[in-house]
Image (tube, rainbow, N blue to C red; front, side, top):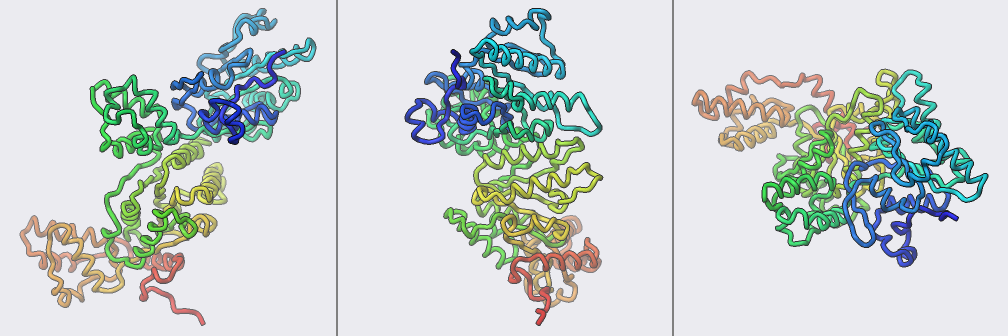
Length: 574
């Protein structure tokens, strides 16, 4: 009789199993979960999503090689199955193993061909699964059958609007491979591979009889094993490491094995060695390429010392960084909200914070797409990257526009609401504390959903304000002019005080200093004369009423009144 548990034992769930099953510790956690779910009878259908197009380490009989996810399934998890089929819309149905058994199927003998079109292919697969199951019931014994659907999101895609009875019927058939008792009680295992869950038809994703397993980006330990496997082939490229790959694996966390292998091929072809000093820049390039332009990966050389003023805020941030570096996470915030008028230096503060903490900044770009499900799929990809990077700051500029709304409304087909839900769930994951620090920035924080700003997602709200006194304004202008080599004597303040504009933002002061520098360089004016001329006709780039409105909102949002200058604090209500 056939083996009732044909999936090969893999990664252990606990140490006791590890000692009883040699080699199990070499497999990833998702494979161990898959084995446990199948062998316990909990499910026979698996949606594998995430980093599904990457290379991965295949432990084969004590020897490790690199291969695809499909190779992993066929060679590591499913070698005991009698028949293994695969399907994708390019190649149609293929018999990966057990051709001599499959060709005995009467339907195949009659037609002698296998369809390529999705609906016909799913019908054919369903017909074969039922034939094998019925044959097992009638004659006893059973053949273990597995089926791998590659690029399943192209076979049964997310519903795109309008009724599609054919698509829904096909999705329902795939769903029934796990729900139909005739099939679920037989040795049938089906695997649907898609990069993003949001790209798949909801009838499949929401099937309670199926299990969705996330394939993560490779952790440093797997990258280290990958380097060791590739070393014989790329000896010149990896010469600098002498077989010790712990350091490059740790520094390149967040990159895929595929992108690293492409990099090594290029280096080997050019007879160049991968230099340890180049890893930071290489990681930036690899990660941005893997994410298809959805993020900017920023390494900052600034520190909080480069931030003018804001002493109380800088002291608070330095305390948080000290806790972070000591791995004392109980009082560490999950995220910050930087709010204040346009031009108050919110983005600049993020760069200074990142440099001070010595962690990279991942800046989310425009991940929204016009296609249904694409925006959500882009977010899934970003979240996978963040979970693999280690410690980082995630910067979301214009957060009032990017984060969506609880009630997305009908104008965007509900995309805003789904983005809101995904962001809210990710930002509140306590497992991210100490790994991911969320930093939202907005001049209109009142438009961000209250739930996204609550403690547990955003614990500290930092308001940034324009200058409130002439002395602050003068010192800001003087400091920015000094950076450009234009010296303004601090003794001139008394003469200039009446001319210094109130509510001067760092952005506006930056523009002023550039104009002063230009006057000095092009007309040969003395710095003081250039400053006076620029101040004479100065007009704030932001209308006064808009500036004052944004200041009031920032005051209301502040999590601690010590962040607010005394001149802007509201009188206490008795």
